[in-house]
Every structure is written in C-alpha cells, then in structure tokens.
Length: 331
Ligand SMILES: [Zn+2]
Image (cartoon, rainbow, N blue to C red; front, side, top):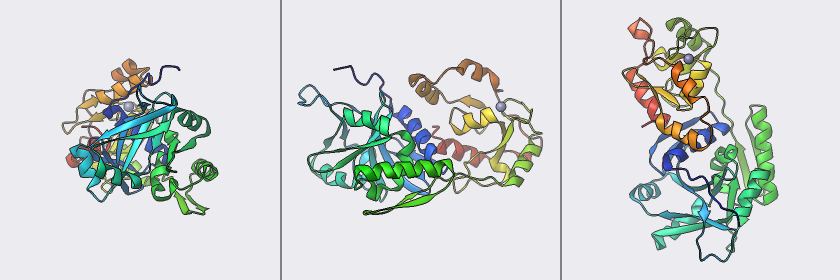
C-alpha cells in the first residue's frame, strides 16, 4: 500500500482552501468569523464548516481502503452545534484534492452519545471523485458520504438538505448541470425525485459610476504599486457580496489587476494606518500546496503604504478596512 497523506494542511491553510473553493462556485462568499468551525456565508446562507484532514483509520483497521476523520468536542464546536446555523463536517484529502462530506443531519445524535466520533469513507471513493468530480460512499447503514472536487463545495452547501439523498446518477447530473450553467454565468434548478435542487452561480456586476469615481480619486493608478497602463480596476474594500459592501468611494480603492486579485485572494492587504502587508498565513498555505512561485518578485512590487487620494473625503473608511480584512479571513 502506498504512503498516504504526504500533505497535511493546518487549520489556517484549510480556511483559505475553503474560501478559495467556495469562490469557484459563487462571488457571494463572506468569511464571517470562527476558528474551525469557520462561519461562512455563501449566497447569503450561513454555515459553520468544521474541516479536518482525511487520514488512514489506524493500525487495527480491517480494510486498507478505509479512511476517516475524527472529531472531538470542543467549545467552538459545541457553540456552533448549539446555534441555529447548520454545522457541516468536511474532510479534505490533499493527495486527490477532494472534499468528503458526511450528512450533517445524522451527526447530532452521535454527538449526544460520544465525545469523540470517527467518520469513515474510502480512499477509492475519493480517487473516483477526483476523476468523475463527485462520488458517493454508501456505508452499511445506507448513509451516503459524498466526495467532490472543490468546485462543488458551494453546490453541496446550497443543496445540503437534499444532496445526501441523491443517487449516483443524480449526483453526476447535478454536477454536469452546474458546470453548464457556470460556463454561461447562469443560475438554474434541477428536478429530482427528492425535490428541486438549486444552482446559484452569483457573479457580480459592478456599478459603472463606481469605477469612474474610484479611477478619478486615485489618478488612474494602483494604490499599491502606482502602475497605470490601463491595468487598473475599481476594487471594493468590503466585498460587494457583503451587506456593507457598498459602491461608495469610502469602500473603493483603485488597484491594478494583479493587486486586485491578490487583495481578494487574501494574499495582500492593508491595515487602518494604510500599511500594505503580505498575509503570511496565506503564503504558508500556498507554499505547502506548491503555488508560491514568484513570491519574491510579487513582494517587491508593492509600496509600504497605500497611495491615498489627496482629498481626505475620498479615502477608504476605517470601519470598511477592518471589516474587509475580517471577511477575507485575515486576523
Ligand atoms: Zn498594483
């Protein structure tokens, strides 16, 4: 049997993995707070997500294909379970880059009986999911444990109440419909025997006036590196998807395409004193997953401080900066 789990991600890595994965599905993703479980909203629905690395189930296991995650009660977890928000338990198997999800509605009873529980799946099912995008392991109690690519985490959450009831053929159909709609930037519904499932690929359109106001305030330059060259974009400080993500100038900043993406990906940010900072924990995560090439060059591109509009009334609002860093998972 080959060695498994060469890559183990720490909780902060997994948080960024969650944010990046959800954004593949919808722009409307907000990190709210929490520390494994993390509280997120996607398409305005809120969830707690507890995420763990999937590993072998130990020396005593009868089946070499068996894998599991273990969850122990913790204050954070108990608080989440006692809230009205759905608590999702996810495993991540980095070797195949797939998530595995257990039916959350069947979990509560088990926690009432024990303080630590093991949730099982199969390595072969995760491998299959890496090929066919989604796959189900059905255990002896008939529970369906779903493994899927990160692209479908949003789809999974959006259809949480029904998705564990679907057959293999229906799961494949759902994923294929989601792919079709995503290419066309559309939303849709799919009817199954279990009921209607929804697909919402929210992609935000910007207010065109916002762009002009931001460009003018910043003299058509990137506030982080000074570049013009028609490479700039009007970025929202608090994301547009957030209820406080307004199109007002105090929530806008002019960034080049590179720094806009880097800001939205939590790689670079600025504090309330306008210092530009690299997010070290995100960098560590990218290093682990082998996506850190070009970092040194990237580091040299930005100024130490945001280049602000001379007119004070056009500058970013302090509350927005704080909230923006929080929603991007920067603590
Ligand atoms: Zn720039």
